[in-house]
Length: 133
Image (cartoon, rainbow, N blue to C red; front, side):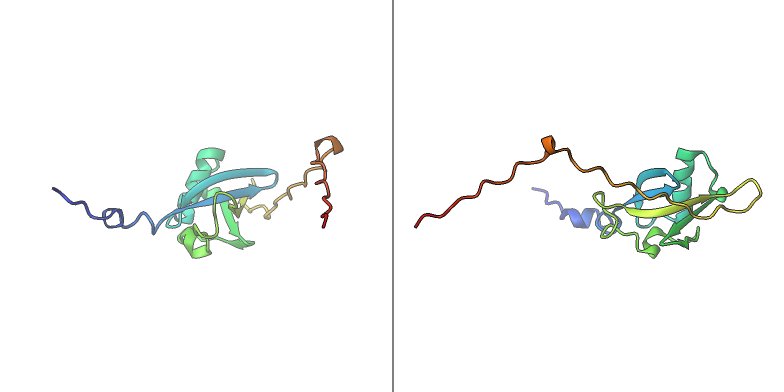
């Protein structure tokens, strides 16, 4: 009988480098993607290039309005699986280089709130029960 070692021994890195879920925002555009905590900012720009066709050199990424360095990793900016989950992705700002060579200022259009539900779609109030003693 052959005994296999526990899964954590076979794949020691599976729990160390989990996916981080990102919402990349520029003006009215939102891109949802995922990456590893060990993904460099430059690699993330390459992912964005595949979607937007804008070269990494013509992109600037921001976390909390601070520019992200190409040579750092997402985990260096606190973008970890503990804080950037699928249900609540982390926001990363995106700005492009303009024709004059300067980068545009970071501009993220706020998401609008949905309108209130019509009365016909609201749940009826719970019936009140009276305790009889």
